[in-house]
Amino acid sequence: MTAADFQLDRSLLRRRYGRAAATSDGADALGREIARRMDERLDYIRITPKRILDLGCGTGQDLLRLAERYPEAAAFGADFALPMLARANARVTPQAGLLKRLMGARPVPPLLAADALALPLARSSISLAWSNLMLTALDDPLPALQEIHRVLEVDGLLMFSTLGPDTLKELGDALPKHAGERIHRFIDMHDLGDALVKAGFADPVMDMEMVTLTYAELDGLLDDLRATGNANASRGRPRGLSGRGGWDQARAAYEKQRRDGRLPATFEVIQGHAWKAAPKTTGDGRSIIHFQPRPQR
Image (tube, rainbow, N blue to C red; front, side, top):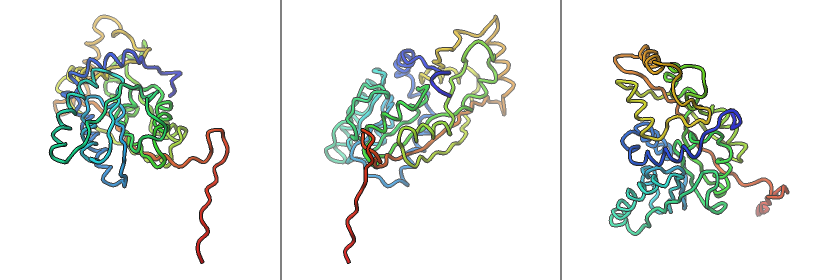
Protein backbone atom coordinates (compact mmCIF):
# COMPACT_ATOMS: atom_id res chain seq x y z
CA MET A 1 0.00 0.00 0.00
CA THR A 2 1.34 3.42 -0.94
CA ALA A 3 0.10 6.99 -0.82
CA ALA A 4 -0.65 6.66 -4.54
CA ASP A 5 -3.52 4.18 -4.08
CA PHE A 6 -4.86 5.35 -0.70
CA GLN A 7 -4.95 8.97 0.40
CA LEU A 8 -6.33 10.53 3.55
CA ASP A 9 -7.88 13.97 3.75
CA ARG A 10 -5.52 15.67 6.20
CA SER A 11 -7.75 18.73 6.62
CA LEU A 12 -10.71 16.51 7.47
CA LEU A 13 -8.59 14.53 9.92
CA ARG A 14 -7.48 17.72 11.68
CA ARG A 15 -11.10 18.90 12.02
CA ARG A 16 -12.29 15.52 13.27
CA TYR A 17 -9.54 15.18 15.85
CA GLY A 18 -10.26 18.73 16.91
CA ARG A 19 -13.91 17.90 17.52
CA ALA A 20 -12.92 14.67 19.25
CA ALA A 21 -10.86 16.53 21.88
CA ALA A 22 -13.96 16.86 24.06
CA THR A 23 -15.07 13.23 23.71
CA SER A 24 -12.07 10.98 23.06
CA ASP A 25 -11.05 10.39 26.67
CA GLY A 26 -14.30 8.57 27.41
CA ALA A 27 -14.19 6.42 24.26
CA ASP A 28 -10.51 5.51 23.88
CA ALA A 29 -10.33 2.21 25.76
CA LEU A 30 -8.15 0.70 23.04
CA GLY A 31 -5.63 3.55 23.04
CA ARG A 32 -5.34 3.42 26.83
CA GLU A 33 -4.74 -0.33 26.82
CA ILE A 34 -2.10 -0.03 24.09
CA ALA A 35 -0.38 2.76 26.04
CA ARG A 36 -0.24 0.49 29.07
CA ARG A 37 1.37 -2.28 27.04
CA MET A 38 3.85 0.11 25.44
CA ASP A 39 4.80 1.40 28.88
CA GLU A 40 5.42 -2.17 30.08
CA ARG A 41 7.85 -2.68 27.20
CA LEU A 42 9.96 0.19 28.51
CA ASP A 43 10.60 -1.89 31.64
CA TYR A 44 12.89 -4.08 29.52
CA ILE A 45 14.66 -1.37 27.52
CA ARG A 46 17.66 0.38 29.04
CA ILE A 47 17.35 4.04 28.21
CA THR A 48 17.73 7.24 30.22
CA PRO A 49 16.31 9.87 27.88
CA LYS A 50 17.07 13.53 28.30
CA ARG A 51 14.34 14.75 25.95
CA ILE A 52 11.11 12.91 25.11
CA LEU A 53 8.66 13.61 22.30
CA ASP A 54 5.10 12.29 22.47
CA LEU A 55 4.14 12.64 18.81
CA GLY A 56 0.38 12.77 18.35
CA CYS A 57 -0.07 13.42 22.07
CA GLY A 58 -3.83 14.01 21.85
CA THR A 59 -5.21 15.03 25.22
CA GLY A 60 -1.93 14.37 27.02
CA GLN A 61 -2.56 11.09 28.83
CA ASP A 62 0.57 9.36 27.51
CA LEU A 63 2.62 12.51 28.05
CA LEU A 64 1.89 12.38 31.77
CA ARG A 65 2.78 8.69 31.86
CA LEU A 66 6.16 9.40 30.24
CA ALA A 67 6.87 12.37 32.51
CA GLU A 68 6.23 10.20 35.55
CA ARG A 69 8.44 7.36 34.27
CA TYR A 70 11.33 9.70 33.39
CA PRO A 71 11.06 12.60 35.87
CA GLU A 72 14.51 13.95 35.00
CA ALA A 73 13.74 14.22 31.27
CA ALA A 74 12.30 17.19 29.42
CA ALA A 75 9.03 15.98 27.87
CA PHE A 76 7.38 17.50 24.82
CA GLY A 77 3.94 16.81 23.38
CA ALA A 78 3.06 17.50 19.74
CA ASP A 79 -0.24 17.31 17.90
CA PHE A 80 -1.66 18.88 14.76
CA ALA A 81 -5.15 19.46 16.27
CA LEU A 82 -5.21 22.61 18.42
CA PRO A 83 -8.23 21.57 20.53
CA MET A 84 -6.35 18.42 21.50
CA LEU A 85 -3.43 20.53 22.69
CA ALA A 86 -5.79 22.77 24.68
CA ARG A 87 -7.18 19.69 26.38
CA ALA A 88 -3.67 18.38 27.01
CA ASN A 89 -2.64 21.70 28.54
CA ALA A 90 -5.59 21.57 30.93
CA ARG A 91 -4.53 18.08 31.95
CA VAL A 92 -0.76 18.39 32.30
CA THR A 93 -0.54 21.83 33.93
CA PRO A 94 -2.24 20.94 37.26
CA GLN A 95 -0.64 17.49 37.27
CA ALA A 96 2.80 18.98 36.75
CA GLY A 97 2.16 21.30 39.67
CA LEU A 98 1.32 18.34 41.89
CA LEU A 99 4.37 16.40 40.75
CA LYS A 100 6.53 19.45 41.36
CA ARG A 101 5.40 19.55 44.98
CA LEU A 102 5.85 15.80 45.42
CA MET A 103 9.05 15.22 43.46
CA GLY A 104 10.81 18.52 43.27
CA ALA A 105 11.03 21.16 40.57
CA ARG A 106 10.19 20.00 37.05
CA PRO A 107 8.82 22.19 34.28
CA VAL A 108 5.39 21.71 32.72
CA PRO A 109 5.81 19.59 29.55
CA PRO A 110 5.81 21.97 26.56
CA LEU A 111 3.12 21.41 23.93
CA LEU A 112 3.81 21.97 20.24
CA ALA A 113 1.31 22.54 17.44
CA ALA A 114 3.05 20.44 14.81
CA ASP A 115 2.48 18.07 11.94
CA ALA A 116 4.40 14.78 12.04
CA LEU A 117 5.61 15.50 8.50
CA ALA A 118 7.40 18.73 9.51
CA LEU A 119 8.48 18.81 13.14
CA PRO A 120 9.69 22.19 14.52
CA LEU A 121 12.61 20.52 16.27
CA ALA A 122 16.33 20.55 15.64
CA ARG A 123 18.17 17.57 14.20
CA SER A 124 19.28 15.06 16.86
CA SER A 125 17.41 16.88 19.63
CA ILE A 126 15.23 14.04 20.99
CA SER A 127 16.27 10.92 22.95
CA LEU A 128 12.94 9.04 22.92
CA ALA A 129 10.11 9.43 20.41
CA TRP A 130 6.81 7.91 21.53
CA SER A 131 3.99 7.45 19.01
CA ASN A 132 0.80 5.73 20.15
CA LEU A 133 -1.47 5.14 17.12
CA MET A 134 -0.37 8.37 15.39
CA LEU A 135 0.75 6.43 12.31
CA THR A 136 -2.85 5.41 11.62
CA ALA A 137 -3.53 9.00 10.56
CA LEU A 138 -1.04 8.74 7.67
CA ASP A 139 -1.58 7.14 4.28
CA ASP A 140 2.20 6.72 3.90
CA PRO A 141 4.27 6.45 7.10
CA LEU A 142 7.68 6.93 5.44
CA PRO A 143 7.85 10.78 5.47
CA ALA A 144 6.90 10.88 9.16
CA LEU A 145 9.39 8.13 10.04
CA GLN A 146 12.11 10.04 8.20
CA GLU A 147 11.23 13.16 10.18
CA ILE A 148 11.29 11.24 13.46
CA HIS A 149 14.67 9.81 12.49
CA ARG A 150 15.95 13.33 11.79
CA VAL A 151 15.05 14.68 15.25
CA LEU A 152 16.30 11.62 17.16
CA GLU A 153 19.84 11.66 18.47
CA VAL A 154 22.19 8.78 17.69
CA ASP A 155 21.16 5.78 19.81
CA GLY A 156 17.77 7.43 20.29
CA LEU A 157 14.69 5.20 20.47
CA LEU A 158 11.40 5.23 18.60
CA MET A 159 8.60 3.44 20.49
CA PHE A 160 5.39 3.15 18.46
CA SER A 161 2.07 1.43 17.94
CA THR A 162 -0.27 1.34 14.97
CA LEU A 163 -3.05 -0.80 13.50
CA GLY A 164 -2.80 -3.46 10.80
CA PRO A 165 -4.98 -4.49 7.84
CA ASP A 166 -7.33 -6.82 9.76
CA THR A 167 -8.56 -3.92 11.90
CA LEU A 168 -12.38 -3.60 11.78
CA LYS A 169 -12.63 -6.62 9.51
CA GLU A 170 -16.16 -7.38 10.75
CA LEU A 171 -17.34 -3.92 9.76
CA GLY A 172 -15.61 -4.23 6.41
CA ASP A 173 -17.35 -7.55 5.77
CA ALA A 174 -20.75 -6.06 6.62
CA LEU A 175 -20.52 -2.97 4.39
CA PRO A 176 -21.10 -3.02 0.62
CA LYS A 177 -17.99 -3.81 -1.39
CA HIS A 178 -18.39 -1.13 -4.06
CA ALA A 179 -18.38 2.65 -4.39
CA GLY A 180 -15.12 3.70 -2.82
CA GLU A 181 -13.10 3.20 0.34
CA ARG A 182 -15.63 2.44 3.07
CA ILE A 183 -13.03 1.34 5.65
CA HIS A 184 -9.77 3.05 6.49
CA ARG A 185 -6.86 0.99 5.15
CA PHE A 186 -3.98 0.20 7.48
CA ILE A 187 -0.40 -0.62 6.53
CA ASP A 188 0.86 -4.19 6.80
CA MET A 189 3.50 -4.88 9.47
CA HIS A 190 6.05 -6.02 6.89
CA ASP A 191 5.57 -2.86 4.82
CA LEU A 192 5.99 -0.82 8.00
CA GLY A 193 9.25 -2.63 8.71
CA ASP A 194 10.47 -1.79 5.21
CA ALA A 195 9.56 1.86 5.78
CA LEU A 196 11.48 1.93 9.08
CA VAL A 197 14.62 0.59 7.41
CA LYS A 198 14.23 2.98 4.48
CA ALA A 199 13.90 5.87 6.96
CA GLY A 200 17.27 4.90 8.43
CA PHE A 201 16.29 3.00 11.57
CA ALA A 202 18.32 0.02 12.74
CA ASP A 203 17.10 -3.25 14.20
CA PRO A 204 13.35 -2.63 14.16
CA VAL A 205 11.47 -5.03 16.43
CA MET A 206 7.74 -5.52 15.94
CA ASP A 207 5.00 -7.88 16.96
CA MET A 208 1.29 -8.13 16.28
CA GLU A 209 -1.69 -9.31 18.27
CA MET A 210 -5.42 -9.26 17.73
CA VAL A 211 -7.50 -7.33 20.26
CA THR A 212 -11.27 -7.73 20.15
CA LEU A 213 -13.65 -5.24 21.69
CA THR A 214 -17.32 -6.16 21.96
CA TYR A 215 -20.42 -4.02 21.71
CA ALA A 216 -24.08 -4.48 22.50
CA GLU A 217 -25.01 -2.78 19.25
CA LEU A 218 -23.25 -1.56 16.10
CA ASP A 219 -24.01 2.04 17.05
CA GLY A 220 -21.69 1.68 20.05
CA LEU A 221 -18.74 0.96 17.77
CA LEU A 222 -19.63 3.75 15.36
CA ASP A 223 -20.03 6.19 18.26
CA ASP A 224 -16.56 5.29 19.61
CA LEU A 225 -14.98 5.79 16.18
CA ARG A 226 -16.57 9.22 15.86
CA ALA A 227 -15.79 10.20 19.47
CA THR A 228 -12.10 9.46 18.99
CA GLY A 229 -11.89 11.10 15.55
CA ASN A 230 -11.21 7.77 13.85
CA ALA A 231 -14.01 7.56 11.31
CA ASN A 232 -12.86 6.89 7.75
CA ALA A 233 -11.15 9.94 6.21
CA SER A 234 -10.13 8.45 2.88
CA ARG A 235 -10.42 10.84 -0.05
CA GLY A 236 -12.13 7.99 -1.90
CA ARG A 237 -14.76 7.37 0.79
CA PRO A 238 -18.43 7.38 -0.26
CA ARG A 239 -20.67 9.96 1.41
CA GLY A 240 -23.28 7.38 2.40
CA LEU A 241 -24.41 3.80 1.81
CA SER A 242 -25.77 3.11 -1.66
CA GLY A 243 -29.52 2.73 -2.09
CA ARG A 244 -32.42 2.87 0.33
CA GLY A 245 -31.98 0.66 3.33
CA GLY A 246 -28.21 0.41 2.91
CA TRP A 247 -27.58 0.77 6.64
CA ASP A 248 -30.31 -1.75 7.44
CA GLN A 249 -28.54 -4.28 5.21
CA ALA A 250 -25.19 -3.51 6.84
CA ARG A 251 -26.64 -3.88 10.32
CA ALA A 252 -28.24 -7.17 9.41
CA ALA A 253 -24.96 -8.45 7.97
CA TYR A 254 -23.04 -7.39 11.09
CA GLU A 255 -25.70 -8.97 13.29
CA LYS A 256 -24.79 -12.39 11.86
CA GLN A 257 -21.42 -12.05 13.59
CA ARG A 258 -22.91 -11.66 17.06
CA ARG A 259 -21.38 -14.05 19.58
CA ASP A 260 -22.54 -14.60 23.18
CA GLY A 261 -24.87 -11.65 22.86
CA ARG A 262 -22.17 -9.18 21.75
CA LEU A 263 -20.90 -7.82 18.43
CA PRO A 264 -17.11 -8.18 17.97
CA ALA A 265 -14.79 -5.49 16.61
CA THR A 266 -11.29 -6.73 15.85
CA PHE A 267 -8.20 -4.51 15.98
CA GLU A 268 -4.87 -5.75 14.64
CA VAL A 269 -2.47 -4.04 17.03
CA ILE A 270 1.15 -3.62 15.92
CA GLN A 271 3.74 -2.53 18.48
CA GLY A 272 7.41 -2.01 17.97
CA HIS A 273 10.56 -0.05 18.55
CA ALA A 274 13.65 0.88 16.56
CA TRP A 275 16.93 2.68 17.20
CA LYS A 276 18.74 5.44 15.37
CA ALA A 277 22.19 4.05 14.67
CA ALA A 278 25.34 6.08 14.07
CA PRO A 279 25.41 7.22 10.43
CA LYS A 280 27.63 5.41 7.94
CA THR A 281 27.83 8.33 5.50
CA THR A 282 27.88 12.12 5.72
CA GLY A 283 25.09 14.28 4.38
CA ASP A 284 26.87 14.59 1.03
CA GLY A 285 27.34 10.81 0.72
CA ARG A 286 30.94 10.39 1.91
CA SER A 287 31.69 7.32 4.03
CA ILE A 288 32.34 7.78 7.75
CA ILE A 289 35.24 5.73 9.12
CA HIS A 290 35.57 5.31 12.88
CA PHE A 291 39.06 4.83 14.30
CA GLN A 292 39.52 3.05 17.62
CA PRO A 293 42.56 3.69 19.84
CA ARG A 294 45.24 1.01 19.62
CA PRO A 295 45.10 -1.19 22.71
CA GLN A 296 47.92 -0.75 25.23
CA ARG A 297 50.38 -3.66 25.47
